[in-house]
Image 1 (cartoon, rainbow, N blue to C red):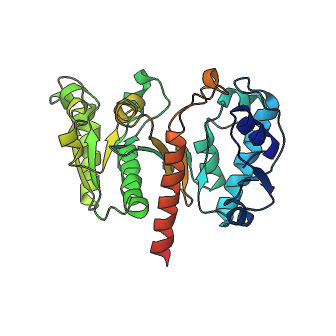
Image 2: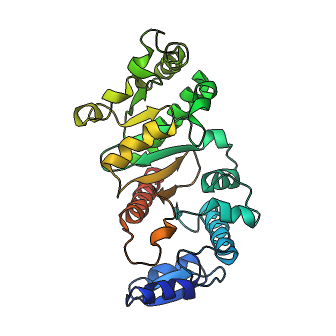
Image 3: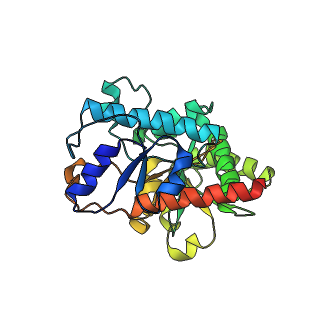
Length: 298
């Protein structure tokens, strides 16, 4: 989804002999793909790697709008988004914090019910709070927020990953899980009630577990996803374990949406040094989730 000439220029700059063909609708892609890269052309922009401009931002936004609409309509099975420069998009009127919030709103889902999961070969993590200052995290955590986002994660593990009985490991906020309030009361007063509510609903959840002992190999074998209280608590371990294969999934949507778990990396754009692993993983995971949903619906 984008612009045929721009993608052809990108291929040529890297010395890649890849024919690029413009298509008018997604159902034309299968016939084109064996001999060329199909691109649904939705606008134009110059090829200026590493130098983002308003034309490129407008093309990115138009691609996001059209792609989201096509997946909602059932014309495509899943949406895979690339990283965007949020500040550049804001210059042209994009008023959402990011693509996740845009897609959630387009699907009629409130931001609270659009849950981020980072998944790789070795680990799946769900941060309860995401892009907020660390000092704000304790005030944002509530038992209901933890319960609802954990329940959405458990449902997605079954629906999209085929895990019949998901096991959730819930991380503590404070060192040593607070040590009965001596190192903070959030674990006792907020996280414990959330876990109790999950267990009462029949979800296999346990914790709060000290985060420093949750991510070694033996511990990871005991759960299907780790529920973490803040951004870095979730993203540091998965980027250590699955840096080149991490995928960002948006859970709680009626559609499948994945994205590579990295940013724009403008500093290396156009130099033929970027690694494609995370993007390949995002496409593969979207396809696997779509196939599983289709099979379950049959």
